[in-house]
Image 1 (cartoon, each protein chain N blue to C red):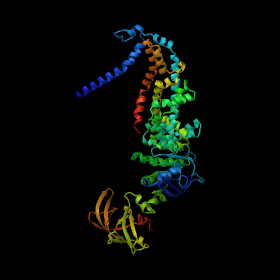
Image 2: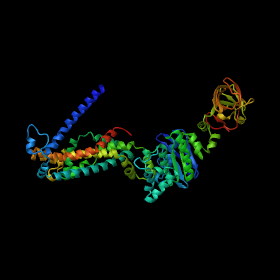
Image 3: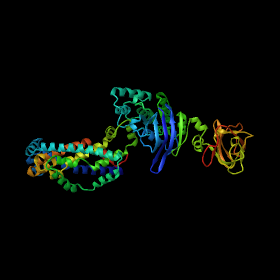
Image 4: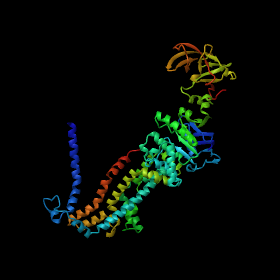
Length: 273
Length: 352
């Protein structure tokens, strides 16, 4: 009996939490299909009268969302690709190669994680301006081509791999390079999947940095473009909802597919071996 | 291939792990590197494979000096204690891996992998992952991977220590069979004397980084070079009776019990020695020189294990007796020629 009550309470609060979390998303989706009259009705109308993609068409006509979408994808692919590459190399170097100052350099890098992103924005901004990259897509990629945090996670995994695997490969004639790509990287696939997904989400949702370094419409990414669109389409909440849906949907789909890996990777990251 | 170790030394910071080690291993031999854990045998193996650089001395494979050569150039196969199989590859992928680095064409790779897999009996498991194999099967795959590139030298680092007792026995025979079929010179590191005695052509016994004896298995047991070798080999362990030598007789630690032994003839008076006797080298003999008292008797099926005391020192002996000994009996023993040694108590040197 006691167990039943505790189970009931557990499910009750979980359901309540889920409803509270999901409601804004539900409202966004449903409003994206409503007409202007329907959205302004009081008491509110829960579901649209009929499904029409009209709002999407109008929103896309008012702002180049396709361009924003392409920019977001381009920046995400480049930055995630480069970050993953540098992370793999750095993690391997710090985990396996022996060079003077290895531990010191790694500690220094780790201590950099203490510096908040907001502080880096100032120096990064002046660097980007000095390089003449202001208002280019490269400005969105260049500061995000390495990550100390992901390096730290991956190094943790590399450290847990037995030395004997390395020496086996070396004796079998593998170079460090071949060992890294043929043995370590395939073995680290779960950790790498997590890193790539987290990184992709961060890149996709990145808002503050694009706001500082991008001004022209053609170089905006989705979140920043949406922000600008808000001021332009402020009087058409249904269009805003349609645009928001376009921004959020890919992330939700990605998350649904990769949920397993994200949870597994984060859970594993804390454990050794 | 002949392997020559010439005064090989390895120093870590302030510890000397291997000291002035010299030995020659003949072509096609299976040699065990035996010793208690921490004696430097794995360090020695790692220097042979090139994983660890030497601090001094030279290593030769046949007439080639390989001392400074990187591991991949030495033409060796190595099997680690934990097998070190690549977990994301199938058995086939694992066995083919060394051939891929050598740029062997794919068709030949597969053919050679299948051939070696048949030899070690894993040919039905080629598409499995290492996690789907038993310990013994993983062991076989590791050996196949080490052998597929036709190494000049096969190194096995405690390959049986992760297996259960029954499998260990089986794999021991297997390693011997595979080694004899391929004829590859093999070095087998172990701390298990029984393993070493049963499969090796020769045993190299080490202690604290120093070579103790390099000999045939039976010679190691029958003719130990020093106290350590005598103590290390044999189950039950050898009996050590401390005492001194006086006019060709052994005087026990209590100063009273004594026995005249022909082997003491040339030994100087007053020397502190250990009279070391294997448990099977005692004979019940009315006219024997040793007067002992029985303290306990264990029935062990076909024979009896007696605990006796001589001059205040307890020892164990297998006694073949018709009437059966009992606690408190006074008996006389004589010693066989085999399995009786005299060691200097200070230096551990054998006195011959």
